[in-house]
Amino acid sequence: MSENGKKKKQDPSEVELKRLEHDLITDSGILPATKGRHAIHCLTVIGTIEGHTLAPDNQKTTKYEHVIPQLVDIEEDPEIEGLLVILNTVGGDVEAGLALAELIAGVSKPSATLVLGGGHSIGIPLAVSARRSFIVPTATMTVHPVRHSGMVLGVPQTLRYFEQMQERIVGFVSGHSHMSAARFTELMHNTGELVMDMGTVLNGEQAVAEGLIDSLGNLSDALRFLYGEIEDGKR
Image (cartoon, rainbow, N blue to C red):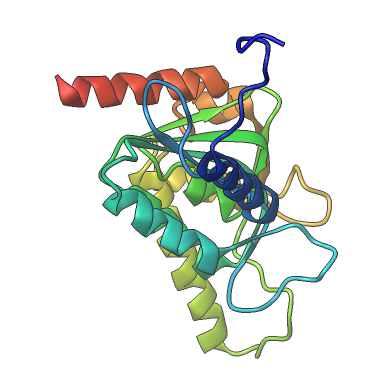
């Protein structure tokens, strides 16, 4: 067999690197950096956002204690040029979701979010936290008041705590989107749409028309925006 016909052996370090990348994707849904013309870190937010308490074993979760160090690494790593957050979440822990949204908003590098499937509940602050937000037409976003699934004390102090948390969410969303606080609150308290709850479900086009999300778009649109931001920054 000629030299050209022999199968080229892979460098052991390359094999190990590919194995590590595979394990990161399989175990944590992390893609450290894309291999396009710019290094984009892909962060996925799926299922339930797990915060201070463990979610049931049969639920897909995004653990906020795993996401926080990723965001710190993205900000500090000079080789990472941009951040893409892909969301398909039903919501979850309110404080954890809002904390992650604040961290994403604080990343100084070009960032974009893309809502696929759903960006519900506390997923909404995450969806608007980046410099530019995108949503596919078939995705939906459910706007509703803060809820609690466990036992609570029926006293004014508890109700005031929920009100204050809701005010923080409304303030963040209105501050990072083109939707006013009054309109977001109005959609949140709508009683004519959800059978078992108050709130509003917006599809992709409605979310953009309301000013909640910046643009209809898909993966290529989000990456095109990030590439453009990176190249403009270099110029």
